[in-house]
Length: 264
Image (cartoon, rainbow, N blue to C red; front, top):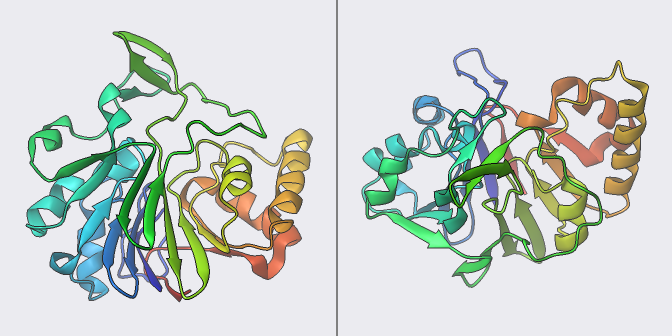
């Protein structure tokens, strides 16, 4: 499997743009996949510079209903005329930041005829499955961090029921792709136990000037190491948080920037 990072908060080459968002291009033995599309159309501009042909993508997956992952999806559907876009059906609830501002997908895309709404488990192909893990028991509590969802016409604390993870089983490996891991990276690892995980850890707000955050990050690093998994992370993990965790996790933890390619 080959992973190419189209958009991330940082870029590995001066010719590439970066933004607060995530977009991944994935080539498996049988499929070409777009996983998330960043905050803007930047992913498509970077794709051209990286010789990634978005018209050849077989299907796209939206990890969750936030604009830093869905913002470019309209552009993708314009470029690629055939690929379905897999979105969890709970994305239609509507999702908001702590100020009550809408931060979800462009709802006009729901009428595009290209969206396939998924449930808690959805098998795309023999070796590619989407999971929400919504009914799983939480080993660690999650923090909505002020984010809200619309339920029965009222804003309530987010539970991230719209977030889904893509499991690719190939060449004897279980490779899990996550967007922001809002349900908690430690919970996700407890549930899924992959050999390789790619995605954000959502630790960016855990500033290192707080000693308690340092302890939490150290404990998280040690728990992640206990799984024997190799991690590729970025976006919402945070640069200083990554560096601190890297000091404990060494070569088991890798950073992804726009323009990076990995053979997994």
